[in-house]
Amino acid sequence: MIMVKTESSQILKTGYKAPDFNLIGVDGKMYSLNDFNSKTLLVIFICNHCPFVKARINDIIDLQTKFDLKELQIVGINSNDPNYEEEGFENMKKFSREYNLNFPYLIDETQEIAKLYGAVCTPDPFLFDHERKLVFHGRINDALNPESHPSRQIMEENIKKVLNGEQIEKDFDPSIGCSIKWKS
Image 1: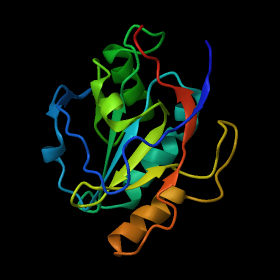
Image 2: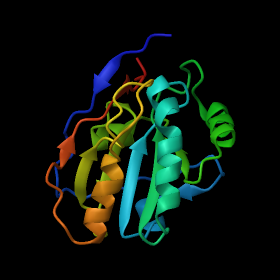
Image 3: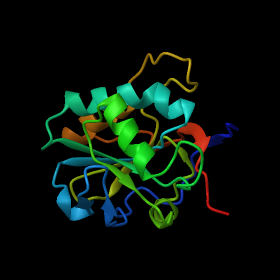
């Protein structure tokens, strides 16, 4: 398995509205932006096989538990080629059970949503405010390698700032992970 370390790029700019989606989750339900009415929405492009995702998945789960669903809703989207090793909908269901995900995990089979958001790596997190405008695109925390341990919870700090009506000083702080596996 090839791990291409990729840094997120900024296509969706701060203040832009979240592109809508209509995707099926591992729970069999269809989801769109209208299904979430939390004060902040964190859309994270993740996958099943990436060592960066596996290293941070418990941090993401913990993040959801730190906030009430009225304050924060996390949504995981898998845009990898479903034919890529360990990917696809059945493997997403396994991944969701294995890690006991506490947020919707959706498949973007056409890869259209990843392109609309400008997602290029996993994990690639996008934080939106109550108007679904982008306020922060970047890291969950400061652990940039799978074996690193975080000392700073960047996303949690930024969510608290948004909820308190404070300004985020660095609105783009590139996430680092495996490249999204595009269909050829």
